Amino acid sequence: MRFPHFAIAAVVLSLAAPAVPAQDFGYRGWGPRVGVSEDPDQVFGGIHLDMGEFARNVRFQPNAELGIGDDLLLLAINLEAAYLFPVHQSWMPYAGGGLGLNYINYDSDIGGGDDTDLGVNILGGVQRVRSNAPDFFLEMKIGLDDSPDFKFAVGWTFGKPTRSSHAGGKPPQKTP
Image (cartoon, rainbow, N blue to C red; front, side, top):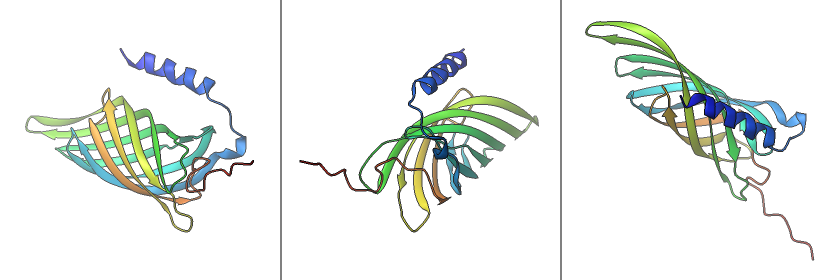
């Protein structure tokens, strides 16, 4: 079973990550997200939270998504974190992963039923850093262990979203 190895690696990485001040962790914003998935073939919508950084440039971003299609109703509650790459431009890339609790209700010709599974997600995306408007993002997820195989989402974050220390800014000035 691969899950225990993933959990051990997550704990080791979180302990090795540099600490950030407590004021950087906590509610920073929220927003809607919509997209499509492959296996199951669905459209989905949901909501996400930006809970700030728990380590330098590592944002906690839980979300919930409801998908319909392929004779399934899928409710996913995802506990995910992403590393925000420190760049000096308005498009900020990020990559991460997390765990997803997936409730599936299905219909078929021989009956229906439901199931609950724990899955693993690997994600990556870009976030458009904007000063006077909600941030916009494009995100892809690859699902392992009982999550949808592939997801593509677009979304917005309202509030004061977490950004890497250099996102949208100018490069640091060199002193002589």
